[in-house]
Image (cartoon, rainbow, N blue to C red; front, side, top):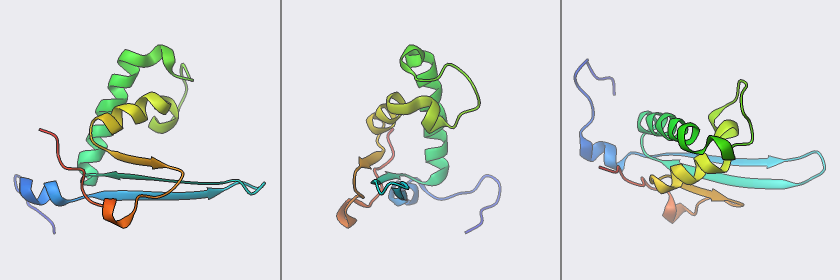
Length: 110
C-alpha cells in the first residue's frame, strides 16, 4: 500500500511484519549448505544492519578478517556482525532453515 509523506503503517502493523531470506547452496564438489535469516520489516532491517555494521567496525575492527576494500556487510562484518544482529533480535539459523512455526516477526525492540 503506498503512503503519502508523513503517513505509514502503525506500530502494531510493523510489529507483525517480517521478512525472511532462505538460502541453499551447493558447491561444484557437492557440499551443501542452508541458512535462513528472519527479521522485521525490510526497511527496519536495512537500518538495523547499517547500525550494527557501524558498531562492528567501531568496536570490533581488530577481530575482522578484512582491513579494507569494497565488501558487502556480511563479508566485512563476518561473525561479529552476525552476533550483533542476533543479539538485537534477528533470527539466524545455519545448517537448515527455520521451521514454519518459527517464521514470524522477531518483534521491534524499543
